[in-house]
Image (tube, rainbow, N blue to C red; front, side):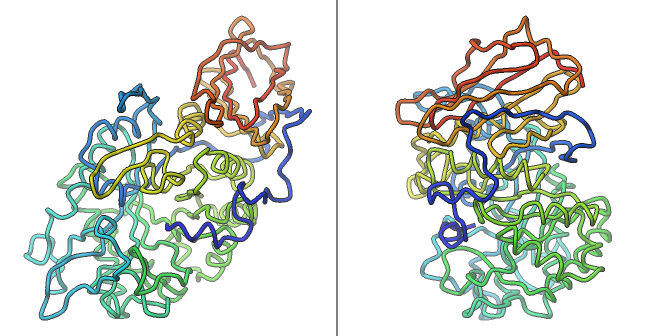
Length: 492
């Protein structure tokens, strides 16, 4: 959830040249799309999302941004018209910060922790758990809360996630972490952390009309970089702490009538650490978890399939709940996303910050001091190639390629294929659809959309210049491009 993570990740990103052991070049490739339901077990797609957090703390009350992110409508933005990304998942960051003084105690704030990243919490103090008491302030966090309500009104499901316990639950009263990066949640507040999450979840459903579809109590809890001099909220939580909080959280949710609200866990930084963390939890803690979640900051490295097998054997769902990188072209994002969809098999994927203060990281730039939005990066249009076409309810299919992903809309008899060419030269690609019983297309014509990430390249341009040759589609992928194809009239 902060930028140095990607630099610290083994294997890193496309920009470093580390593409992992199985990434196939697109050159002279024939990719067979396999529609058999039992092949690959890729699952039904739940959706695309992003965290609210910092950008929403500044810009959350702006309707046009909600339209750009959470609808597929063509939306005016500055002197452009942007194709809405159609995100249908918003992750709401439950704040850990307040600026009250309580019996002489106050939040300890790192000098590196800017105000726009300080997310205001609702529980003022430890005197009362009653949400109707003076210990609670339900007017807090107005802009991020506004963004959450707007996203929900546009059809998005909302996940609540906690980055740090409230400041007064922390050992050193600092929501950035402990001095040494170790556990920072006071043992007598394990239950209180769960009470806070469950109380906000119940209040949101009753008073804001926003039922959380899931809740997450941790953010990268195994990481040790959450320190008192850090630049954002964060808290290390050992296995024992996670187990205690998970047990309390399930009880507190059930007590408030939220028995059907699943718990996600544990938003670990990397695929490999997520495997180790899951294996370290005891059976009771695992039983409390409804969905495994991982962050994608290991880049092109890591045992994605190993984590998928862990989730599958435990009969749990699996999301990539947060990822990001500093490559403004979007090719690193697209390459690693293809690896996820073909090896990790998540049923949802969430980008960290769709608007960011660093140009490379955010698909859209903004200035937190002036609240002005700025340039749109090629990464935005790359994401649109996936998010606008692979939609909730589609079934993900196996392709045998790490640069091509496919999804089937059975009701519409439509096959969607997204292909990535991150190389510096054009590459031929043949899609073999012989495993489908019928492939008719629209009179043989296959609509395609193209984003070429070079400075003068086209941005999500629509074309009708591609035709089927029986059950084969022969393509040329431009250098540094992402292309999407709709093949209609398919039968399995």
